[in-house]
Image 1: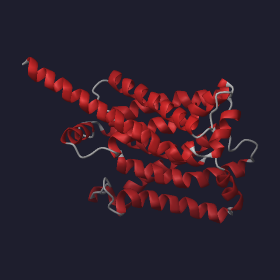
Image 2 (image 1 turned 180 degrees about the horizontal axis):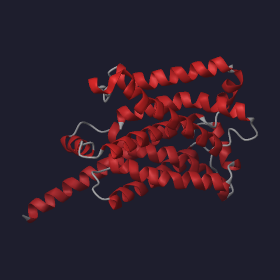
Image 3 (image 1 turned 90 degrees about the vertical axis):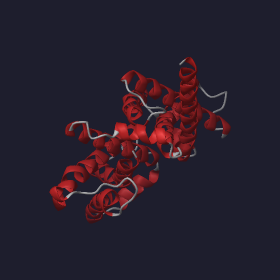
Image 4 (image 1 turned 90 degrees about the horizontal axis):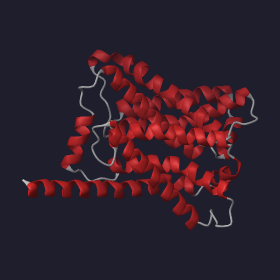
Length: 289
């Protein structure tokens, strides 16, 4: 009995360590574009403390909820999910600091406030990437499949399931919008848009979102049943998902100072532009997560 318990413990530890390794790989893979973006470096010098603190505080419960679904191991209690979220955050911080030091962006003569801000901003997508690494960089192991099946079992009530779908879309939208929000190209495109371009971009965003999930048969895509009707899934998931992408885009641009000193119409057009990749990220999150 003791030998069985010991072997189970060893197997558990091996799986957890593999999950940590995948998490570190995911943190590097998914955050590298931002780690090598000049606009993100400059934010370390200029981002207001309040906005940075809010971003870091928002990210923590987001990681807890995400960990409960795709953490480094199967988590039953919220305490375990919180532990994995803290580990993912730590991985994001370590990976971001290591790469920024390696690239010479952070130097030892730099004021602490600047490098803390740089690492703090970069740790958000890196920590999300750490958790995504578990689901996207893992081989098809039976235990992992069982865990995912248990977590996505239809035993949850419909309201909780719908809220989970919206949350996962918000995660995907936040991840992609953070990559692009600080770049000047988003505002430049917004300046070039006419109102007709903006309307067309909204329509295309909605079509792509819906097509990704329901039409093109990607792995993880959903099939709308006959009872759903042609428009029910579109109105129930795609339109709210696009609204989530818009709100996340606005928040990302505000946090990263992309819309400071802009007129209302310019802010609106900028949000519509950023919501295009954010909507794709939201749709992809429904497939992946």
